[in-house]
Length: 185
Image (cartoon, rainbow, N blue to C red; front, top):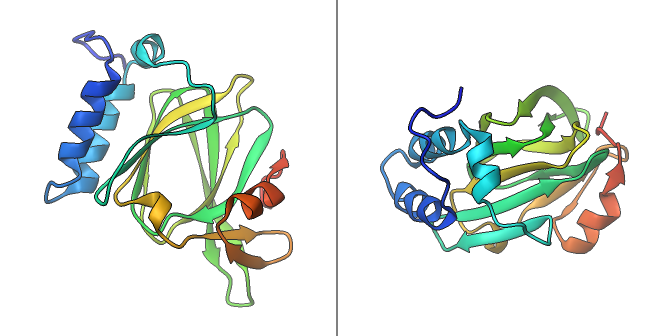
């Protein structure tokens, strides 16, 4: 449902609001509320969002919050990974599928569920969540990703769902596991 106030989207205002929300007593709820309001009218976000050259852009990061703009390309699935902190995603363009995984008692991880997000949707995951993201629309899927902590400073993991191998999250390993239309099944 579109926002009723039709206030133009302003990235700097959003960043200020999210930074303040990160230090509230229920930061997850506060961040989610802000993102729900922001992406409720995707056209306003599209009109006001800068045209970023890179697919992943850090908009702000400190010890309390990391705010990223992420663009996923059609037919591409990013490898299974964790964040080691709560994350909230607000999609404002396209559609994405998040495949969620759990540790398998026999080793590795196994898919436990999936969540499809379209423009206007918000999704929150906890610090122990493992997921992949696939762009399932014909156009790139764009969203604002908010992590409650310094994402680039934590030791994270990537998961090769085919080989059942866990590896350290590095750019090299990420690109090694990136594959077209690989849903992690």
